[in-house]
Image (cartoon, rainbow, N blue to C red; front, side, top):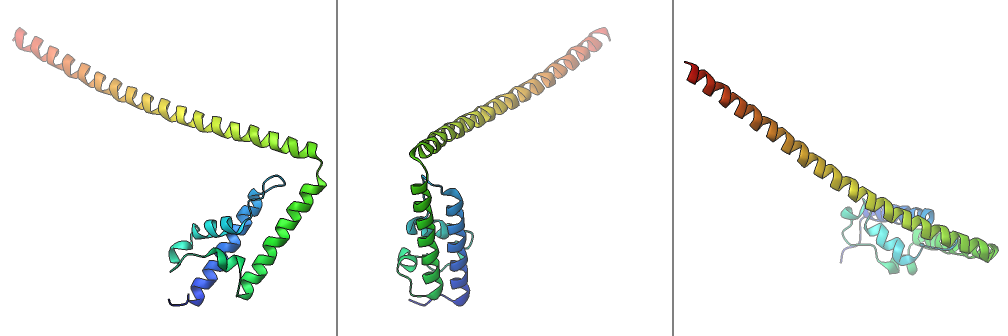
Length: 156
C-alpha cells in the first residue's frame, strides 16, 4: 500500500489536533471524553477526512512511530493526568452536584428537542391552514364571479 503524501499526513495531524481540542472542551471532571478511539473517530469524521486515502488508525495514535504522534500522545496523557488530579482534588459533594446538573441539562436538552418538534408540527399545521384559507378564498371569489356573470346573463 502506498504511503500517505506529505499533504495527507499534515491534514491527518490537523484532524487529530482539532479532535483533541473538541474532546477537551467537552470533557470535565466527571466525564473524560479524551480517548484514543474518540480522537480517531472524530478525526476521521472531520472536514479533512474526505481527502484521506485511508482513515486514521487507532494504532497511529496509540503506538506512534512519527515524532508528531509521539508528542501528541504525550498531550493526551497529560490531559488525562490533569483530569485525574482535578477529580481527586474535588470533594465528592461537588462531583455529585456536577452529575446532578448534567442530568438536569440532559433533561432540558430533551425538552428543547421536544419543543422544537412541536414548533415544527405547529408551523406545518399553520402552513396547511393558510393554504386551505387561500384556496377557499379563491373558490369563493370564483363562485362570486360565476354568480355575478349568471345574473348579468339573466338580466340581458
